[in-house]
Structure formats: C-alpha cells, structure tokens
Image (cartoon, rainbow, N blue to C red; front, side, top):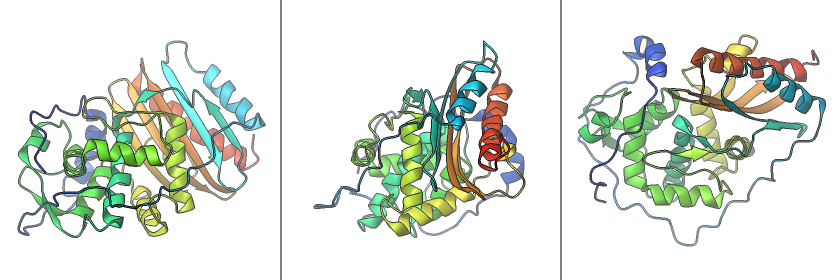
Amino acid sequence: MSRRPGLPPVRRAALILALGLVAGTAAGLPFWASAPARPEGLGLAPGRAASPRPKAFRPAGTRLQTLVEEFVRSLPADFGTIGVAVKNLRTGETAEYNADHVFEAASLYKLGVMLGVFEAVESGELDLDDPIVIPDWAVSSSDWSVYYAGDVVTGWEALEAMITLSDNPTALVFMEVLGVDRINRVLGRYGLDSTHVDWWEPTTTPADVLKIFELIDAGRAVSPQASEQMRQILLRQRDNRRIPAGLPPNVPVAHKTGSLPGIAHDAGIIYLPAGPVILVAMTADLSDYAAGEEAIAGLASLVADYFAGRS
C-alpha cells in the first residue's frame, strides 16, 4: 500500500498531555531491534457479517439526568461547550447533555483506529506480533511522540503507546496501513454514524463514544477476545487527571483521553461497586483548560456519589 503523499500533521497534538506525562514515561515502552516490516495490502475480508448495533442511547429522565443538567448549569458562563453521556451497564440507567453534539474528537479518534486494527487482526490480515518501523513522516507530522523515527516496535507496543500514552505517530502508521476509508466503514457497521476518522479533524459525539465502550463491555467490539484485549489496554491508561481524579482511590477505569488547545475529553468504563458505568465527557472552546479537566473530574465524582446512594 503506498503512503498518502504530503500527509498533513495531526493538528495541535496534545502538548498538555505531553507536559504531564513525558517526564514519567521517558523510559516507557521498549525499543526493539528486529528487522523492520510492515503489513501491507489490508482489505475487508469477504463475507464478514456486520456486528449487532447497540440500542439507541436515550436518557430515562431520572434523578441522575437532573443532577447532570444541574451540574452543567453550575459551570461558568464562559466555560465553553460540554457534552455528557452516562450509562449504568448493570441497570441501564442513563443521562445525557449534548450527547449528539458533534465535537472535534482529538485523540478519541484513536478508539476508532483501535477498532479497525482489531478488525484486521480478526480477519488474519494483521499480526500484532510483527515489527513495525516508526517512519520519519509520522514523527515529523506530530507534536507528541513516544518513539523516534526509525524505532522498530511490535504492533502490540504501537497499539499500547497509541492508547495509553496517546502517541500520535503510531496512530498515523495504523491509519496509513489500514486506510482511513476502511476504518470509517468499520465505524459505520457499528452504527457510529457521527464518528469519522480523518487526517485533519476527526469528529465524534458523546453518544457514539458511549456506544464504543458499550460494545467493548458486551464483547461485541469485533469479538469477545478482541473486546477484552481492548478493555485491558484501556485499563492501563496513563493520563488519569480527569475521570479517575474524581473517583475514590483504586477504582478501575478503562478509558481514553483527548487533548487539544481548548479541548479536554475523557471517556471510559468506571468499575463502581454498583456496577460498571460508562461516562463520556467532551468539551470544546474552553476558556480555562484546567476548568475543563476539573469539570470532567467533577462529573465522575457526581456519578460515583449517585450510584453509591450519596446524592
């Protein structure tokens, strides 16, 4: 597969994330010296059945819905835009605010790339044990990178860096190998109609991101095995300043962040004693970036208190 000429950079990559993580991860994932190789010629396997779509997201008008709306109204007038989607996977209780609003995805687009990767693995077209060269074009197109140009890593290591450290070059490599159109077709088959992976401005909605995590929890994201592998990677997320910051200590969260200037996202499954709860919080046009992170932590605290019976 030929590389897309003149690839534009992933815009305004997460420098804030880099500042928070680079010191702690400078010695992070290992570099390997295997002979470079890259999978080629990936295409959709013929005759693959479409996976069942999750049920449409509809808030139930519960006390949780009221609390979410009150929380949003309490934010400063110049806060910016926020979108929220919540679902208790044990009881089905939901709440939302701007759940269908289309946001710039920031690094949440990497969830879509991950789905595409596991689709290719499931069809036998991609082996994550194979080594991948980190090319210069991918590093030079990114403001945040775990690896240097020429480093050779396995597909598993590339996937781990892309999700847990939000590495950009590994995401670009997977996008080139799989093809953006193919990734978007995978998203479409799962009913993620407002989510689009793009070289410039990928987009999604809180409702679509909630669907992704619901698929993963239900074992319907590609396959039960792939879903569990995705969940385990997401549990190893290294940026824990948003959803986890609002939770009691040692509460597991399988989540993915997204960061750009004026944008702070976090989304994932919170494993509370009352059952697993998906929380998606997305923001845009933030006047105060720290306030965006604090709002997401506050939403996580609200959700944990509600399902613990404290609100």
